[in-house]
Every structure is written in C-alpha cells, then in structure tokens.
Amino acid sequence: MALLATALLITGCSATGGAPRASDRGEGGGTVDTPRLVVSMISHGAPGDTFWDLVRKGAEDAARKDNIELRYSSDPEVPNQSNLIQTAIDSGVDGIAVTLPNADALGPTAKKAVDAGIPVVGLNAGMDSYQTYGLSGFFGQEEKVAGTRAGERLATDGAKHVLCVIHEQGNSSQESRCAGVAEGAGVKVETIYVNGRDLTAVQSTLQAKLSQDPGIDWVMGLVAPVALTAVNSVRDSGSQARIATFDTNAALVTAIRNGDIQWAIDQQPYLQGYMAVDAIWLAHRNGTTVGGGRPVYTGPSFVDASNVDVIADAATAGLR
Image (cartoon, rainbow, N blue to C red; front, side, top):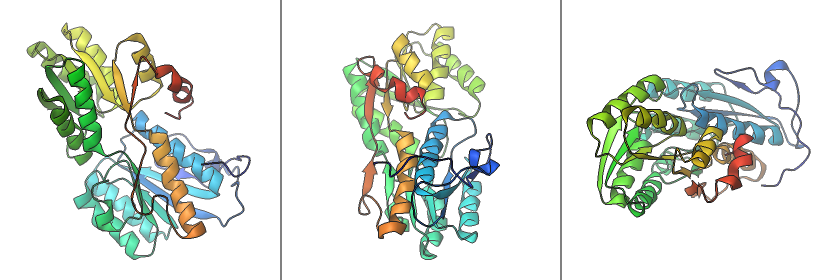
C-alpha cells in the first residue's frame, strides 16, 4: 500500500515489555488528516521471540502512517491473552487486531468486541476460525497448506525421517503445520514438543533426541530461533540431519547463506502486522476491511540459497 505522506514519529503507542517507544516519550504525530484512533493489537507472542518483533514493527509503521495510537500487548498463555482482549474492549478502543492460536478459547472474547461494535481483524493464527466469531478480516498464511508445501519440498530433497519441532504446545496453528508436513512429505514425520521460551532447554532436548535416533535426517523448525538453536543441536550430537524452518529473520538469512539451514518458509510477519492495523483504519475510513471478509494471504513462499539475497536487506531492516 502506498504511503500517503512523509512519515513522522508516532504518538501514544504503548505495549507490554520491551524498550519505550518514541510515542511513550511524548514525541511525534500521524501522517494522515484523519481523526486519531486507538487500536489494540493482542498477540500470543512470547517475550524475546524475534518473529513478534517483526509483527509489531509492521503494526507500528502502519499506525504511524494512519495517525493511530497503537497499544500492543502479548501473552503466550491463553487465559492471559483473553484478559488482554477484554481489557481492550473495556477501554473502548476503536479497533482490535488479535491472534487466535486457540480459537475455541479466545474466539468468544473476540466476539464480545465484535458485538460491542468494535472492528476486529485477525492475524497470524486462527484463519480456519476467525469468521465463526465475526472477525471482518484475516492476514496470514493457511498453516496446513504451508505445512504441506514444506513436506513436499522435504520429499523432493530426499527426506526419510523428519523431526517436526512444536515450540508452543496447544497452539493449533503449529499442530496444523506439522500435520501438513506429514501429509506433504509422505515419509516418517515425528513430532517433538519443546518450550520455545527456553532455548537452552530446546538445544539439549533436540540434541538428546538426535543422539538417540541417528536415522533422523531432517529437523523441521516452526520458528527461526528454534531452527537456529537446532544448528547447535545437530553439531553437538554428531547428527547428519539437515535443517529447514518456517519464518525468517536477519540471523536466519545468514544461516541460509552459510548452509547451516537449507531453506525457510516465509509468511511475512511484518506485513501481517502492517495490514491488520491498516485494515482497521480503512474500516473507519470507508466502512470495509481489506479482503472483503476473506483471508488475505501473506505467504507461504520459500527462501533458500537461490533467492536469499533478494530479501537480505529487508531482513536486516526488520521487514522480513
């Protein structure tokens, strides 16, 4: 989407965790001549997860352009995320962008916002369920489809025994990815659960598994930090397994260039955050959201040694 004017610093953006934003210091303003809006973005992102840093950056850039006060908050625990949604409703925000990693638990709370007349869109997780709860749009990738494509790529690469690493137990999107990998690969795909918030434990768990079963020839991560950690696990276990992953960041680009990781599936988290916030601004501006109620796909696409340089600058800038 074209920028409407020269970007200025954002006013009033707040969030849980992280360094203060420019708006928290009382600087800046919007770039469009439209009424000031307050939008809450509520995700299930865990602290320190670089994926969510990209989502948040996209949301902040859209808020800066659209004269929006962005209130970003996140919590990986479903009850806490539900409470954050309810807090946004109670505060009377002008719009909510929300992830639904467990739609059965979070959807009813999001529906309360819809029933209160607040424009609500989904992003990243919950594509299969967002319409059930009245959300007007969704921005992300279809996880089962992305997983199937990853599995097909693994089969083409000669995989025989794949270890699919789920780093958030109970996240239906991640379960769908691994199910898709198994369907697309047509070979043995084993699932292992780790705590993605403790990368030291992730490394030791994967190292032990690879040492125990030398037949594993591919590790399929579902997020860049886990895949990068798996590089150490493979090395220290003496395994010959190769590594692929979902999602990218600047360090992942380097790992692909170095051959430590073979390829990644990119769903463009920056774009998910940007479009979710921009869609709410458009809903107030012209009464509709992007996509006409249908999902807007931001992925999947493959990044490997043949095209990694194309996205390298964007990854360094925190845009991919």
